[in-house]
Image (cartoon, rainbow, N blue to C red; front, side, top):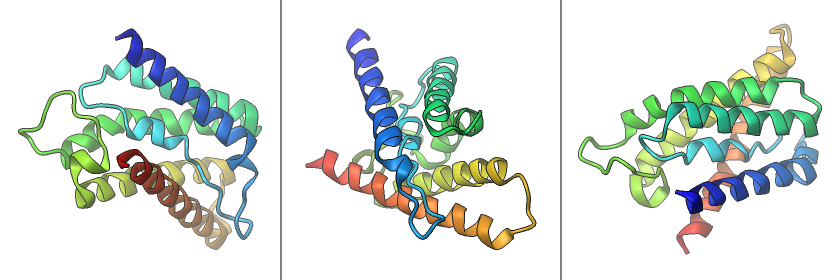
Length: 166
């Protein structure tokens, strides 16, 4: 239990630092920003306490907000993703799987994991950029931000998964 908590905290710090120092400064074509910290919530295991996942995600979002100067956007969006993650995971996990299943490419398989990942990342980007822009007058820019950021985030997460498998 303590080792799991320590690993989770270290992963928390690595993602915050990576986003604050490197990834937060990348804006491909002026619209696509990698949001790798979503990966923290995505890989929370099945039957992880909901209160703990909400706290982890809120504080992760809060730290990202502090370093990115986005007051409350990441915290709100990430907390919402943490709230729907267990229900989303139940849709893509076979019923006879282990109770403490950790969602990964190797445990869910490529197809199920891809659907699970695309749904949560796209949902996060939709909420995040809807709150950030807070207008739908420029739907083209909003759509480019959502799709571009989701695409680059998905590429980074799949890369992390492939590195973890080796």
